[in-house]
Length: 169
Image 1 (tube, rainbow, N blue to C red):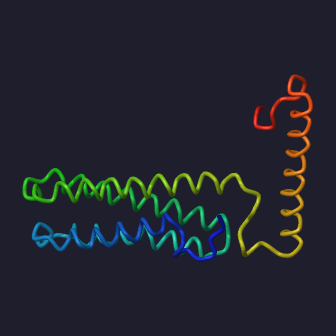
Image 2 (spheres, rainbow, N blue to C red):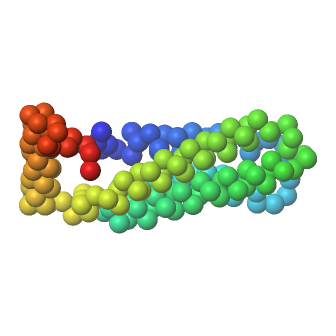
Image 3 (tube, rainbow, N blue to C red):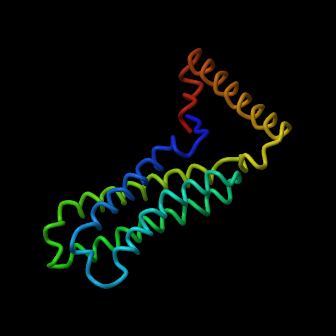
Protein backbone atom coordinates (compact mmCIF):
# COMPACT_ATOMS: atom_id res chain seq x y z
CA UNK A 1 0.00 0.00 0.00
CA UNK A 2 1.24 3.46 -0.87
CA UNK A 3 0.89 6.24 1.68
CA UNK A 4 0.60 9.82 0.48
CA UNK A 5 0.35 11.37 3.94
CA UNK A 6 2.22 10.55 7.12
CA UNK A 7 -1.08 10.75 9.01
CA UNK A 8 -2.14 7.52 7.29
CA UNK A 9 0.94 5.54 8.31
CA UNK A 10 0.09 2.87 10.92
CA UNK A 11 3.41 3.47 12.70
CA UNK A 12 2.75 7.21 12.94
CA UNK A 13 -0.70 6.50 14.36
CA UNK A 14 0.81 4.19 16.97
CA UNK A 15 3.42 6.83 17.82
CA UNK A 16 0.76 9.53 18.26
CA UNK A 17 -1.15 7.15 20.53
CA UNK A 18 2.05 6.64 22.53
CA UNK A 19 2.53 10.40 22.94
CA UNK A 20 -1.08 10.99 23.99
CA UNK A 21 -0.96 8.17 26.50
CA UNK A 22 2.36 9.40 27.92
CA UNK A 23 0.82 12.85 28.39
CA UNK A 24 -2.08 11.25 30.30
CA UNK A 25 0.30 9.18 32.44
CA UNK A 26 2.47 12.17 33.31
CA UNK A 27 -0.51 14.07 34.73
CA UNK A 28 -0.27 11.71 37.70
CA UNK A 29 0.96 13.08 41.04
CA UNK A 30 4.14 10.97 40.76
CA UNK A 31 5.36 13.29 37.99
CA UNK A 32 4.69 16.45 40.02
CA UNK A 33 7.94 16.04 41.93
CA UNK A 34 10.90 18.30 41.12
CA UNK A 35 13.03 17.36 38.14
CA UNK A 36 12.76 17.01 34.41
CA UNK A 37 11.39 13.47 34.18
CA UNK A 38 7.86 14.47 33.17
CA UNK A 39 9.01 16.94 30.52
CA UNK A 40 11.74 14.66 29.16
CA UNK A 41 9.34 11.71 28.92
CA UNK A 42 6.79 13.87 27.11
CA UNK A 43 9.40 15.27 24.71
CA UNK A 44 10.77 11.82 23.89
CA UNK A 45 7.29 10.36 23.33
CA UNK A 46 6.27 13.21 21.04
CA UNK A 47 9.61 12.97 19.23
CA UNK A 48 8.72 9.50 17.90
CA UNK A 49 5.76 10.70 15.83
CA UNK A 50 7.38 14.04 14.97
CA UNK A 51 10.47 12.41 13.49
CA UNK A 52 8.40 9.94 11.48
CA UNK A 53 6.41 12.88 10.09
CA UNK A 54 9.44 15.04 9.36
CA UNK A 55 11.33 12.23 7.64
CA UNK A 56 8.28 11.36 5.56
CA UNK A 57 7.88 14.96 4.40
CA UNK A 58 11.56 15.47 3.53
CA UNK A 59 11.26 13.78 0.14
CA UNK A 60 14.51 11.84 0.17
CA UNK A 61 15.07 8.25 1.19
CA UNK A 62 18.31 9.00 3.02
CA UNK A 63 16.65 11.70 5.13
CA UNK A 64 13.61 9.51 5.81
CA UNK A 65 15.89 6.73 7.04
CA UNK A 66 17.86 9.14 9.24
CA UNK A 67 14.67 10.46 10.84
CA UNK A 68 13.28 6.94 11.29
CA UNK A 69 16.36 5.98 13.27
CA UNK A 70 16.00 9.13 15.38
CA UNK A 71 12.35 8.19 16.00
CA UNK A 72 13.42 4.69 16.97
CA UNK A 73 15.97 6.13 19.37
CA UNK A 74 13.24 8.26 20.96
CA UNK A 75 11.06 5.17 21.39
CA UNK A 76 13.98 3.55 23.20
CA UNK A 77 14.38 6.64 25.36
CA UNK A 78 10.69 6.43 26.33
CA UNK A 79 11.09 2.76 27.27
CA UNK A 80 14.18 3.53 29.32
CA UNK A 81 12.42 6.25 31.32
CA UNK A 82 9.39 4.02 31.82
CA UNK A 83 11.69 1.32 33.24
CA UNK A 84 13.05 3.94 35.62
CA UNK A 85 9.55 4.94 36.74
CA UNK A 86 8.50 1.30 37.01
CA UNK A 87 11.28 0.73 39.52
CA UNK A 88 10.06 3.46 41.87
CA UNK A 89 8.03 2.53 44.93
CA UNK A 90 6.10 5.78 44.58
CA UNK A 91 4.83 4.72 41.15
CA UNK A 92 3.42 1.31 42.10
CA UNK A 93 -0.11 2.49 41.28
CA UNK A 94 1.02 3.12 37.68
CA UNK A 95 2.36 -0.40 36.99
CA UNK A 96 -0.36 -1.39 34.53
CA UNK A 97 -0.19 1.86 32.55
CA UNK A 98 3.59 1.70 32.45
CA UNK A 99 3.53 -1.89 31.21
CA UNK A 100 1.09 -0.98 28.43
CA UNK A 101 3.19 2.01 27.41
CA UNK A 102 6.41 -0.01 27.33
CA UNK A 103 4.68 -2.50 25.02
CA UNK A 104 3.42 0.28 22.77
CA UNK A 105 6.85 1.94 22.61
CA UNK A 106 8.39 -1.46 21.77
CA UNK A 107 5.80 -1.96 19.02
CA UNK A 108 6.63 1.46 17.55
CA UNK A 109 10.31 0.59 17.62
CA UNK A 110 9.74 -2.75 15.85
CA UNK A 111 7.54 -1.13 13.18
CA UNK A 112 10.08 1.62 12.55
CA UNK A 113 12.89 -0.95 12.28
CA UNK A 114 10.93 -3.10 9.82
CA UNK A 115 10.07 -0.07 7.70
CA UNK A 116 13.66 1.17 7.71
CA UNK A 117 14.94 -2.29 6.78
CA UNK A 118 12.55 -2.49 3.84
CA UNK A 119 13.49 1.01 2.65
CA UNK A 120 17.19 0.21 2.68
CA UNK A 121 16.59 -2.44 0.02
CA UNK A 122 14.83 -0.20 -2.49
CA UNK A 123 16.15 1.55 -5.58
CA UNK A 124 13.95 4.60 -5.04
CA UNK A 125 15.84 7.59 -3.65
CA UNK A 126 12.69 9.47 -2.64
CA UNK A 127 10.09 11.82 -4.10
CA UNK A 128 12.62 14.62 -4.36
CA UNK A 129 14.71 12.53 -6.75
CA UNK A 130 11.90 11.11 -8.86
CA UNK A 131 11.66 12.78 -12.23
CA UNK A 132 9.77 11.37 -15.21
CA UNK A 133 12.81 9.49 -16.48
CA UNK A 134 13.57 7.90 -13.08
CA UNK A 135 9.92 6.91 -12.68
CA UNK A 136 9.96 5.32 -16.14
CA UNK A 137 13.09 3.31 -15.40
CA UNK A 138 11.67 2.15 -12.09
CA UNK A 139 8.36 1.10 -13.70
CA UNK A 140 10.23 -0.77 -16.47
CA UNK A 141 12.23 -2.69 -13.88
CA UNK A 142 9.05 -3.63 -12.02
CA UNK A 143 7.34 -4.78 -15.23
CA UNK A 144 10.39 -6.79 -16.28
CA UNK A 145 10.57 -8.52 -12.90
CA UNK A 146 6.85 -9.35 -13.06
CA UNK A 147 7.26 -10.71 -16.61
CA UNK A 148 10.21 -12.90 -15.56
CA UNK A 149 8.12 -14.25 -12.70
CA UNK A 150 5.25 -15.07 -15.10
CA UNK A 151 7.62 -16.95 -17.38
CA UNK A 152 9.12 -18.92 -14.49
CA UNK A 153 5.64 -19.77 -13.21
CA UNK A 154 4.55 -20.97 -16.65
CA UNK A 155 7.70 -23.08 -17.05
CA UNK A 156 7.20 -24.57 -13.60
CA UNK A 157 3.56 -25.41 -14.34
CA UNK A 158 4.47 -27.06 -17.64
CA UNK A 159 7.25 -29.20 -16.16
CA UNK A 160 7.57 -28.99 -12.34
CA UNK A 161 10.38 -31.56 -12.20
CA UNK A 162 12.58 -29.55 -14.53
CA UNK A 163 11.74 -26.01 -13.43
CA UNK A 164 11.70 -24.96 -9.75
CA UNK A 165 8.84 -22.88 -8.44
CA UNK A 166 9.57 -19.13 -8.84
CA UNK A 167 9.43 -18.63 -5.07
CA UNK A 168 12.17 -21.23 -4.53
CA UNK A 169 15.72 -20.06 -4.76
